[in-house]
Length: 443
Image 1 (cartoon, rainbow, N blue to C red):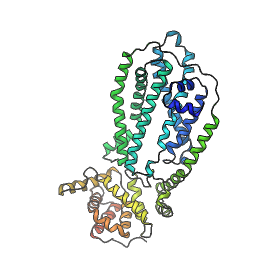
Image 2 (image 1 turned 60 degrees about the horizontal axis):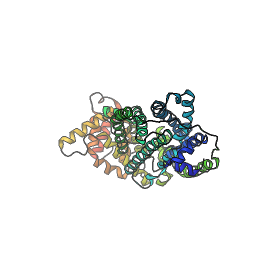
Image 3 (image 1 turned 180 degrees about the horizontal axis):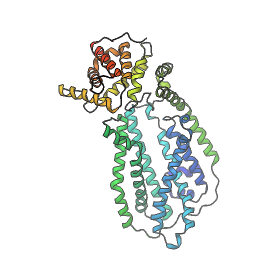
Image 4 (image 1 turned 180 degrees about the vertical axis):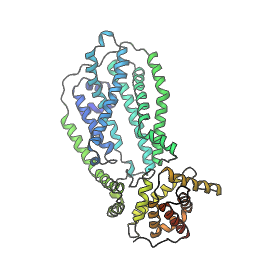
């Protein structure tokens, strides 16, 4: 099997499809290509050292389940249903799985489109939109290609083979969508009044669109399967011994390894900062950030603390509380941007207040958020001390008077008013609103 055969196969060339289907090397070649695909999927997003096994094998395990499901439905059930009884043997079914999985895995290079470093050239929202578009291109390409494969090998009309693939894919999309963390988070966000980041909103819209298409499209594909009855459908070909293109695969592995080295170093730095913040070592995290430049970190991975997450309401106040005027301006700028996002998260249902009614609702929603996110008063006390100490902090306090009023309302709520931590926060907010701290800022 050569690089030319693989490229022609990806374009739907009938001769290349036959060559790949008849080659026992397709299974091993495809398996290695799937393993290599984990690099373009993850090289600038996650650090391999955080979870080596998941980083390397997650794509393979998912594709194994996905490919087996597609084989069982599209070929094992629907294609064989239209074959002659004498052709449907148990041996043929299990031999066909190896042939089909090799062909399915050979589509892995399509996913190399994910390697495009769009985050280096676009803002996070635009980059997410492009990545969603790439996901759509990759998914559509694979569906059409597998339909073409079944057409060429089984002798079925393309529209019939495509319906077989769409039926299996539709069920898979719907099931995966229901059990995906993103879908679960969207439900919890709606129930708890939480807000997703703009990037997550784009992903959720894409997921909901895909699930909606699967929900309505799958029954139509099922109906088409029963209405379209192709004749002369044949089984997958018997495979012949062939040599695995070792040189090609080694060359691809070396190339992808070289591509991943630089971005992985950037992701590793971001991961280290994240671990420091998650462990509560806020000053150590700031010192680590201060020792780097903005370009030293992965552009595709937000620096910690990650806003629009529950942990932000504990971690970000802690980070703001340890910031010093001598810390690099870019570090302070990043953290104040995150602070603005946290405020928007707290009062998101009402947006920017336009009148007195909106102001009251905004304050109420900030108070409500303090219960939803299990906010701790000590963190906000530390945050206010830090804001008073920082040159840009005074301006931030003036711009966010309503948020401070919301914190005050939360601190003076009936169930909290007598708790020492909340009483201290109420006093800090009072003096912050007056422009003076209750005590000298921490050095």
